Length: 175
Image (cartoon, rainbow, N blue to C red; front, side, top):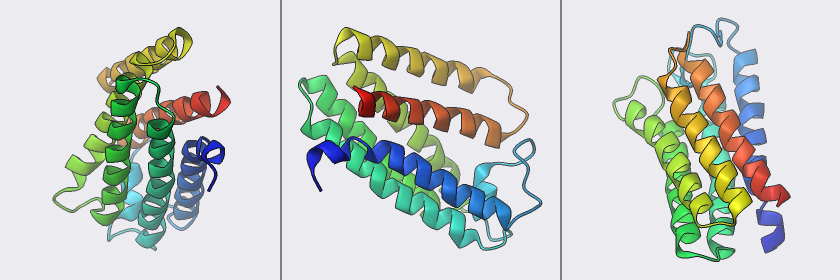
């Protein structure tokens, strides 16, 4: 795979995640964005939980490619560290599928996926040129602010945070 195509892997990971998620939702008519967590689609009680869980694991491969791109194209130490944090986030993303909702490690791995990704994005941005630094800082502030809102459901805050992650991936792909 060529290096310049890797910059699109963050977007690909997000698209793949949503394709699998909507497929899982289509198999679980009970699911509501306003009442559940996205991870409920991967629990033992869900119909075909493997759809959601495999989607997480496949998406994590693309997030790892994205992190590799960030590290290989880094121009500063902070960018390198930020890319490395995002690579750890990719591992946590896969672990969410391996330890689905209802298992003991699930809350930890799902929380730390978001923590690692947003810290990595912030560090990468802080080591970047002014425009990328400012946008990354803004997205980070939105992520923190979003975690302080009393959302009607876990799925809604998860969706909000995933949209922010995809915005960062798009920012990187288009620069």
